[in-house]
Length: 118
Length: 108
Image 1: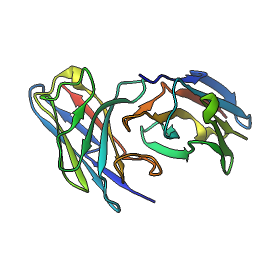
Image 2: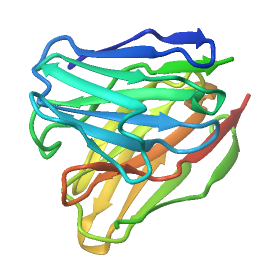
Image 3: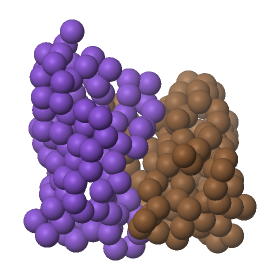
C-alpha cells in the first residue's frame, strides 16, 4: 500500500526558532498534500492544503506567514513553523492523495511529528 | 460548512465485547473514511467507504450516504483496539474534515 513518510517524528526546540517538518510520499505521486494539527485529546484540524507547484491554501485562522508550506515536487511537501512559541506545541500530521481529490483515492497519513517548544 | 458528529465520545468495554461507533454528517460527501489512531498518534486507515458495507476481519463498516451516516462495528474487542476512532469526510472543495472521534478503551 501507499506509504507516507514524515520526519522528524519528534522535535524539541526553543522559543523563537524555526522548525521544518517533511512529508514524503514514497511510492506514489502526491498531487495534493494536507497538513493537520492535533492538540491533546482533540480531533485533527486541517491547517492547509497544498497542490504541487502552487501556493498552499490555508484554513481560516491559520497564519500563512507562520506556517510556511512548500510543495515543490510530487513526492515532497514541507511545513515550516517559523518563530515557534510554546502555544505552537502540538502534533502535526501530513496526509497525501494521489489525485486532486481524494475521491477514489484514499488518504494516506504520515506518522506525525510531535513538536514541543520550550 | 459540513458538520461531522461522532458518537459516543467515549466508550469503555470489556475485552470480547462488541461495539458500534456512529458518524453523522450534515451534507452530501464525496467519500468517507474511518481511521484508528493508536496511543502513539499513528493514524491507521481502516475503511474507505463512501457507501455500502465492507468487512475486514473483526471490523466492518456501513455507510448510508442518502441518510448521511456511517457505522463502524468492532466485534470481539481486543485491548489492541484501544485508541481513538475518527471518521473523516471529503467536502465539496475536496478537503477532508474529521469528526471529534470516539475514544475507545478496552479493558483486559
